[in-house]
Image (tube, rainbow, N blue to C red; front, side, top):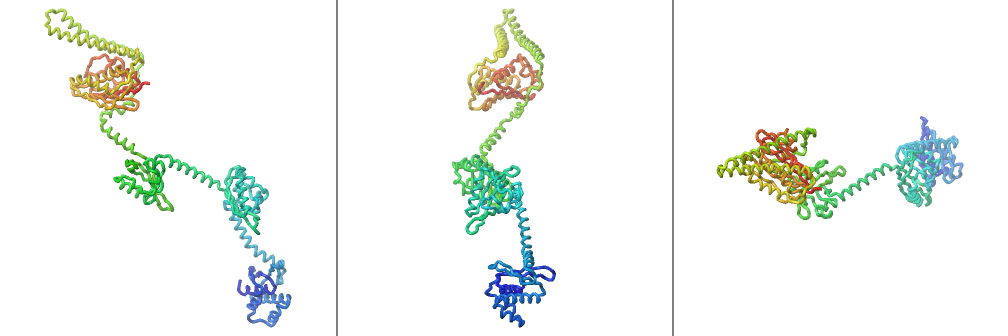
Length: 639
């Protein structure tokens, strides 16, 4: 508004006794502008003087002189002023004055009052309508529902259209159904709503969170905020927002569960979980992790991580820390930590940097005690270097008999083999006995020395027959009386030493080296000592038979949790692969052109039967011309 119009409006309004006024300025292009102002009536003389400083006509001077004499003269003066302004600016001006005391409008132009007021209201309402449009667009396109209600929350004067997203009902439905929102609140949460209403009635802003059941019968979480509108010290209505916080609640619940799980992990795990600041000082550590090192939390927090590290390991840890602080990747390293009692504990630690506002502020780490694992690994490496002969034993567990012969064929073959073997074993010593006995009997003049020699041969062959018969009888007894074991607890290591001593001379006479690798501690098993002695005796005897001069036989024993393992290993002629399936069969003898040894084929079959009676396991690993290893595993106790 120009300065002239301002003065004009103030002057004319003053003349008419008005408090404020509007000038509707209709320009030549048809556009209308509305101007308004307030003023002080006591300054009307100044307002008028500002307009008529120059070029006042006699008639104007006369009006100005008389404008205080009566009301009609004032109106004429005001009209004259407005007319002069209109003519000088080539404009159509409409002046409407407002008096608060009289609550009335006064039009000083030729137009009718109602037309002028209508034109004024249009130009006043036009920006208001535009503002209302902007407000409606805003309220309809935000997630929250804006409302205005009575103080009880039972009648809503205004509800934004976003209420339909929340409840499934349009805003018109809320206007027509006063209790729609209240009925949607779950009964168990209604007290929260009542407390909310009580607070806003008392003139305080309030926030409540409760659950509702929407039109689709889905439960939603609502945050209800309200601000009381107070007039004359009394709350007359409430304005606020309704926000859907279901997703927020779900996220908070998930976060809460995660925090609970993390807290449980921190309290229960024996692993060391810790946070350090950027300088390497402890900020926090889990109780169990600190306890494993003999400390409490307060003894670690505030101290530098390197204070607890073995001096020889500190350089490596410092390098690992630098790597962590330069990236966001997980870094794994080993730390040798000294506990409260001066003991070194090896931890395998995984750590990564912690960020805040895109800056690294520290690191988070988790370590587990690998001291025992490291010791076990070292011990295992030491044992592996000593087990040269164990290479051929590794695959024993996987070797199984893949071929079976029908029962009838097996029995027939065994019968033939038995008859052949026994016939041979009986014929040979009997021929010697009979021959030498006949010689002694028929020649009375036979020299005494020769009689003695022949007698010794007869005695030797007789003992050989006795052993053969005893083997047959023992085997038969095992077959017929399988469960009759004379069980007792004894030291199997002591038994093996006895066997070694008993066969040492025989092995030495043949030029063999009989050695043992037996643990110093005793290994007690519950078994039939005589039969176990016989089983191992047969294995050692076979090893001596089939190992050529300068060979080696080794007796090895290992102690396991529930069983003992005994190995009889030799560097003998070995067993061909095709002969192994019948190795433990009754009466069978291994064919080998290089070595024909006496025997009826009871030795290994007897060993197998004794081991089976004790619920044990016997296996063999062999290479031709390199040797054989027989492995016997026996339970320490027999159920």
